[in-house]
Image (tube, rainbow, N blue to C red):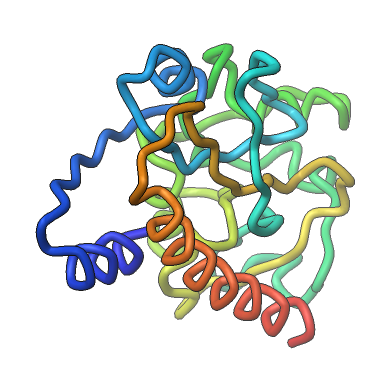
Length: 201
């Protein structure tokens, strides 16, 4: 996202950009009211947000979620793990999305247990560093894994642990939206290729 913003700003220096952050369910009302021109959003099968018919999402790519285990973990050599195998672990959680209930809790409930959280983070990326310090195990989006040194990364055996990343736009005719979407398309293509290489590896 930051690359798209900087690239757009360099090519269109006279256009004023304002970045507003928030959860999708928080941003969509402003989009529908015309206070925002576009929003980059995610939608998780376990934490859906409901959009009106006037707001459509153009999906860029699907981002898997990963299980991050601390060093010398008993399941560290496994490429795929079931969450139920980690029922007795301490989890590094994140605060929930549209409902306030974290995706982690919903996914674990489907496996028949409630995760014991050692700590809760306010962003999806920050739990990725905690397993390396032995604080517990974490479930994070693939793009939130900034550094996998010293930890084990596994794929969860769960069909709904992924999220779709896309863009919504308002119904207005802002002439620069097409150029901004082109910047996002280019960045999304690179990210999509990176995620495919990680899956192949």
